[in-house]
Image (cartoon, rainbow, N blue to C red; front, side):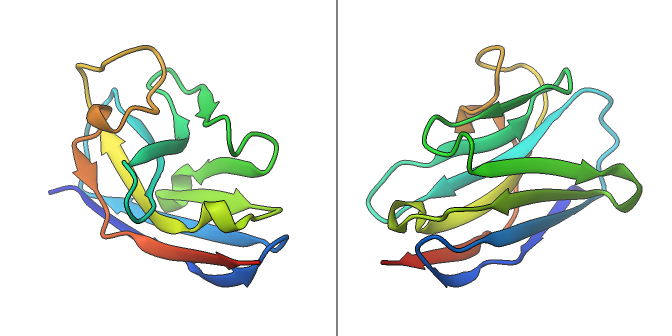
Length: 126
């Protein structure tokens, strides 16, 4: 049973930084994508930063240059370093894992993900 447990969310002022963590367990897939997605109130869930199934990374346009996704395979942990945070980054952030088939080459599409964590809230005040 796949389990994804996020942590690290909180409240910060604009311009601040946060690092999210996601500990993954119970998966044995050899081909998968894994990443961070978010959902703001009244908006659709969107991809933020992901590791594609080929190991490359893709970032959403709104976070390029500010967010960095990384992973520690020894710890089965996925990270999201978020810098220069803006009020529009306020959302529930989810860690997710997806297996084929996929909708496309990069995996920002939430439809590509089969397993989701419970989410961690990030609130950025101006």
